[in-house]
Image (cartoon, rainbow, N blue to C red):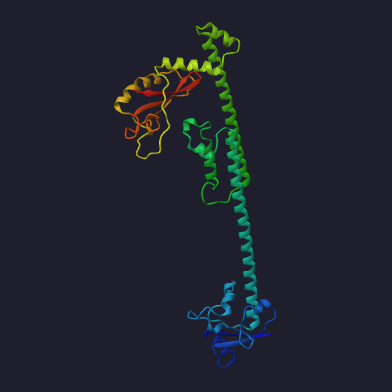
Amino acid sequence: MQATITYLLTEQAQRAQMAATGQPVTRKQQLTIDVTTPEDIAAFSVREDGTLYMDLSRISDLAPLHHKLYRAEAEGWRDIPPHLSYFESGADLLDQMRDDLATAKATREAKAEQERLAKIAREEKERWKNDVVSRYHAAIVRAGLGDLDAYRSRRAGSIPFPGIYEQFSAELDAVGLGGAVYEEVNFAACRAEYDQLLALIAEENTRQIAAINARNEAKIAFIGDWVAKHPDAELRQQHADGLLCRDEVISLIAEEAFVAAGVPVEAGYDDTYCRDNDCPCGETTLKCLPRGVYGAWKPIQAALKHLDDPFELGWDVEFVRVRECLQRDENYEPGGETAGPRRYFARLAMPHGPFRFERMIELD
């Protein structure tokens, strides 16, 4: 099958041909070539009569992108300028088109393969990241830290393994997995780093268990010493017989410690509240105390600050203001006060030897 190619000569090409032939040479030229393969046919336009053509003379800044050449150019044919120099034959032009289109096809295929491999790498990286987080999550659960969200929200002083999660997050950021941008990373090296991190968690877990065991042994020794010095001979004998309940003796030790520290007796309140929006009942956690209430707390605080704390357990307190609901009382008469007076309480945690005792007291 034959196809015609119409193109424009440059002025320089016109002069060269006129010098060679001694005849006028028109700017618009036409070549007829043989086209045999489907790939070659696809590069040409088709007239109504079914003949193939390519009109390169129509290419200009004002020409619409309607010619099949633009399909060829879109495929990577970039070497043909808008006004063509002289071609010795149409076959030369077709050969150039074939080479360029073959190169473009290879480039496309290489790019597609690169994108496919990049997608696999991204999926592997995401899968590995999820695996690392899952492994870390499992490790801290085994270490008794609970779920990650709860672990993040706990105060630094109450975290059994301070700094572990912070180091884990830093490792993620260091390899580009902590943010939205995934960078190329050495998976093997990262796995080794996280294996080391998990080993660190296991080491911390072992250390913590050892500390817990040491504290439990200290509690047993403390109880033994306390009972040995107790004036009640029957209590000493009960302990010697192994029949003194641990909870009971700890309660006795706690009561003695609270009395020695000047802590008032255990107090409480009814925390059953109504759902009446107009009723002021309820409780509120406080960050400050009224002047009159502070006077009741001050001597307790002074005693706590001077407590012996060999295990560095520390003391802690949370203040609450309470108004009990009167509407839930069976003797409540409609029209009266719906909530009781304001009462102030302190939830107190106090160290004593290897123990940390808790008590709710009323400040009045």
